[in-house]
Image (cartoon, rainbow, N blue to C red; front, side):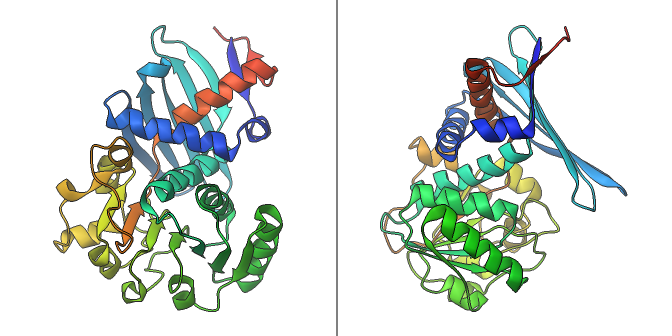
Length: 319
């Protein structure tokens, strides 16, 4: 039998603290050679794009993939498929849209825990869409924020977002007056947009800041400029293998000779103590997030365990 969980059922089971714990496990397992991730493959069509991410986690006895199809009107279908590694049988299918949102936020939380100053209290957030919700919740879980400044092109949408997130987090969340104000005076800067041009001037950065650039997971997107990459004292990615294929932020800087991939660390390597992380409060740190199936696998297996324990989901009569 194959356990099937709807989007609503996954949402009801998966919390941000649990997502952070299991995403951290995924990063560290890969760094130690105990898990494996395959970069995203995209099939582009006029009517939409199909994206497939694959991974294996032997310590969980699971291999699997997430497939999601996006159409121009933003409608989407997303499913995570979990397969028993030893027996080769499909064991579960999970609605994976919410799971993707929350594990993306969780990856930012793990990065902030590792790369931001301990006393970081102010967040500058670019973006006010659905992923911005989980990004803000994740940073709140990683640091005790006192203020959040939000910048977006649609002022009404930003105002609604701020009101909602003030109620949800208990933190002072307000619209930023400008892009520059979003950056200056912030301890942490998160970008979660679909922008094709840099969102801010790297000259505005200040010592000690931590930047998490999350939206640029395709070559036609770019959230930060080459000055930001050049000013970063430490650059960390979720996966160098993925970043080298699709980081719209880093590839222009690489082509201009501003860094070598050999000098870039995977976040899992920092967490496992294989590569150094932040070494002083004055460093500017940059985390580039692109998305990995391994995060879905570890988080999905946790959800499946909770579903079985609580009798959630439906068993499909498929051999």
